[in-house]
Length: 396
Image 1 (tube, rainbow, N blue to C red):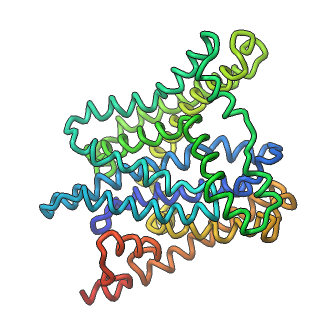
Image 2 (image 1 turned 90 degrees about the horizontal axis):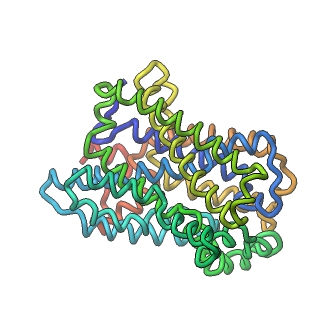
């Protein structure tokens, strides 16, 4: 099946759509964060977290880096430097994410936008080898290793990271007992401080930065546009990713044995688990990308097509999910977070995915962009005449 429609690579839309649906399932299992007030993991929750938690946002970060390259390439083809406009575009996106974060503290739009400000700087680096080396340095988590060394050598700044990873969530009592106004106030400042502290101490900031650069390089080498030409290398990479995933998964499992904490403090053990667990997430992320590419080149591609529409409306659907399910789970709304077991949350999540696939397909039969994507594009160019309906596009 063709990977291109117009100026879009459909397979990238498929990956982005898959990532959004996977992230939605994680959020459903988490009851939009309320699960962590009293976590009780069972086989369903463990399976969803193992397959998708930490991998879905990584896929979105990879696609974000690729999307940046596509925008810059398109502008360069028109003889335009898009760097300034891209920075403004991210400022608008950060504002959208900040508004969304008032409803759902776990918003990732704000994070993706703010970290994206680094991309125009790295775009000026012409050597792919240098970019890959920098990306690898980010993904190796040097800051966490420094903190781990501080703990291992007898305490110091690294203890703060271990304590933060083990500590409770100060915002949770508000989420469990506060009204809508209290949740908004908590998410305005204190909830965001707790979220960013977790992102910093868990290594996710450097992980996303590294994946941005990987996505940019994949664009430069036309990885997604030349899928049929690099099949052998892609399959070798898939085998390597599977081996890496198994090795890191069993390494994390081995750390849970009683023998390990004898050599490490509890904080050191937690930090080492975070580092190796992050590598496991990266390996599984690579597996998902490579598997989806393989499926796209097979007869199964017809089953992936609906995900492309979802991928084109990622921003709109991501926010819509929160607007529906945060009031459903939180006590200021229906408060079903402690009424629905994991089976119920899974079935509701799967039905929600089916509904989003249908809605996205129907929407793009008439429109060119998702509604929030259109508003974002209009604010990016400071224009209101950007065609939304497909009939407007044809008339133009």
